[in-house]
Length: 335
Image 1: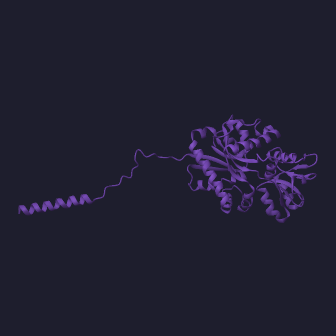
Image 2 (image 1 turned 135 degrees about the horizontal axis):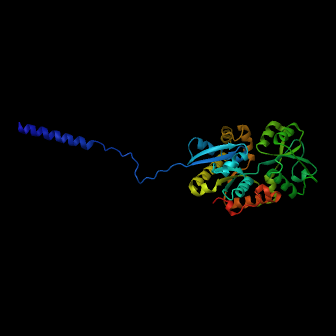
Image 3 (image 1 turned 30 degrees about the vertical axis):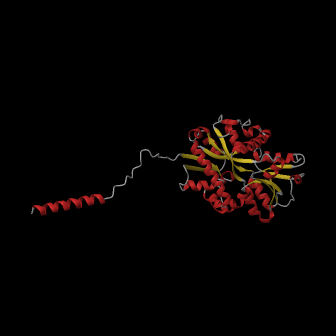
């Protein structure tokens, strides 16, 4: 009996040991203390409706879906005035604004706003509804209707005209009116020649059908005058203090913005639809037609600095106040 009891106890012990040996170890699901945890940084950014914001269409979609490196809260503003105060007081960390406004804010904030890249070149075009215009000199003796008197479009127009031997008020007449009036006049035929920006150009071409056509690309006409510079109308600016404290986050934003621009170039129809979705333009059809004419780019580095400096110099010579009263120094550039 003692032998039987001993065998039973030994068998029970062996079965217990076997069960313990086959039991899987519990996985440690807790992160190691040595593993770094990365928190996303919240960045408030603004773009303007129209060409200055069109390059950001894909980036805004990525941000809405949580696919960006950090969290981006985008605001779409109808005019630069709507973002100026927020940029100055630091509520916005990044914004896409006109290049001359970037220069003005740099001066106004004593260097707190810096320019990181150019995102839009020229968006101005000379349209006709009957007049035969093939080159700038064909405008001699004609009347040109334009918008935005006393701002960048007027200075660009005057620069191109004077460099081609035309003087407004002498051998060419320039009349200013609001964009809707000029657009309606072109479509009706009451205005024969007018300079308009995109996306107004595309809207007029759609509404005017075969009656209105593009005669001159003002960006190309500028480049014929000076091959070393070009029209640069939109840029990306950053809050200097934020950028210094969050350099990696700003770099990630700029990389993703460049990716967005590349996407736009290769996926025009999708990008146009995103413009309507995020209220950058009212209709995808207008965005589809306007995109190729908006010169959407991503340019930074030495060449961008050289060309934007040359462009701002022309504006300064036309009206110093248009760039803040002085040409920006080296602190103007985000590094």
